[in-house]
Image 1: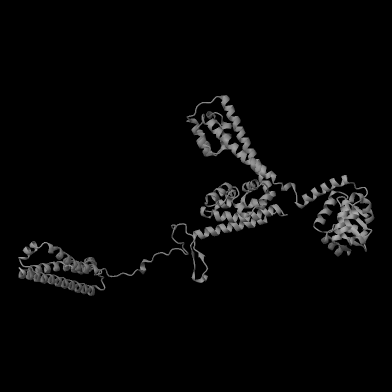
Image 2: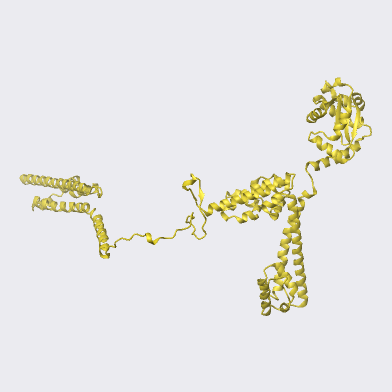
Length: 585
């Protein structure tokens, strides 16, 4: 049995001298405790040395992927024909047995054997010292790591992080310097600040002109447009600025030189950043642009770190402060961060910016992962993703422009009406062009005289008003008439029933008044019964007006009769009492 062992210097092939000890794998480590015991267990048969680092890296990369390198194939063909081969990697053993028809073994005993060989490797291979193995292992591991990570100088995203940081600093410095030039030269020529808006053109004009009195004799065609140049020359003649000395003008011109130099360097830096972004992240550049993509990479730290973020994080990257404030105060979370400055979101309407930012972040996340981990340098994914985002944007805008309607032939599918720029907001879109009004199709009718036409509706209105007013009146009259009639009847009965000496009798007997009052209070008075009857009667409606009126009259009559009887009964009792008093007297 032979054992294959990989080293940083090459492949070693050992001959197992005592195969019977492999059965007791638990005790196998004792055979490699010393170098002498190890030499009794195994013996070096052949060694295939790597010629250079490239061969070593090629062999190591193949072995990591469980593939058979070309040099190892030749080595095993020459040394292992008809032998059993002990190997540590089962997948590599299967590849060797398939291609070279060599019987390969991989089990627990082989693993213990490989561990023992590793511990006594410098003693078993002559000429390979331990101090030589360490640097070879370190160099090979570095080379393998670079290969596995597909390291390339063109893929260094640190340059992008530094370039975008410097670009932002240059913008701040340029704005500061330009404002200082405007304030300084504004004492001499204040009108120029409103005429020339661009900072670089302003600095070039000041450098060329110097004193405003020289403006009429100079040519500014290489800096300004003709209209702006003419306006500046006219303003220079009537300017209200103060005079400036030559020494002050030299300092102003030197500051203008600084502004012009910084602006030129900023342009060069932007071109460098654009080239780096197209080389490192072409898909991301197509999706969001060079500046936004570089800021995303700089905010995440690197392209690999940005690729680890999900789409939801890419969407709000740069708005962490607003996010945590919203979570703390339980308000709505932000919809976008640095990605807000992308051109696709700028094209969307304000109410669609949130939706487009979500779609753009999802597609950008795929593009970032393709740039960071993909092997190709083409921007095919970015082009396709941008087309999908633009289609989604057009779809949202189409829904807003036209109202969805279903036509008879569409089988329930919604269709979008054509957009008409001339129609007012809130009115539906026009499917076809507006038709012209046909006056010939009008039908004429006889006109009714104005007097009759005016009189008839007035009469109807009056009748309707009278009907409405007269409807509730009978109930009110009945309710009002009943107490009046009761009062008249009561007064008549009282006048007939009570004679003149009744007043004297009542004055003579005061104690009986209380009893009479209590009796009168106990007996229901006609006014109370009538009030109850009136209160009980429900409000009349138009439909049952006659029936309810008759019922109300019947209830009123019954109440009046009851009141009359009660009055008559009390008068008869009074008469009897008077008679009894007269008899006793």
